[in-house]
Image (tube, helix red, strand yellow):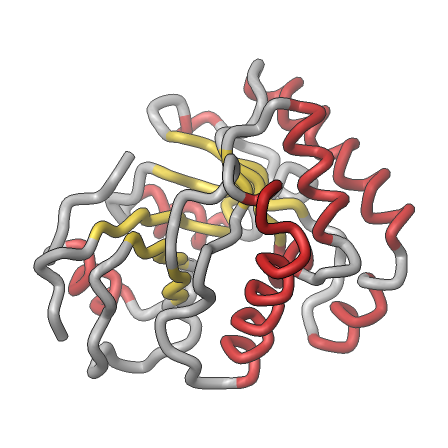
Length: 209
């Protein structure tokens, strides 16, 4: 792998999903955390972190994902409720917005999340300019395709919310045995992921805060 010219933005997802996972995230060295406000009950350890909303609409499998993408009105209502709840808990709007299972990237729903970022002045939406670093499984293929479609249809609107060229989710790879492009990389960590892979990436570059 070549890391020299790469800038990585680390974000830990699923804070609030389960207590052991929250502890792993807090001990990971990652300062950007995406919070599930409808699942978590204790957010006291996050005062020094950069916090975003990990919007959650229920469902843990691909079938749930495809059902939700046809419930645009429901997604919009739930999203705004969770943004308002985030503001109530933390006293500020999220630094960034993303979703459980990448639901926001679906082209039929993507404008709902763009509109929410505009309405609430949320600085960043989880979207990249070029897709994923390496397609390795069905999820990474779907995410890559959705990113390409979102950029095709919403390119000009995306510009002010995007902060990375590629996604690299540690869900998708068992080892980092491929070349990472010289670009800005959004690295996504879940507490179930291989901690050694995370440290391998963290040790190569300083995190962008």
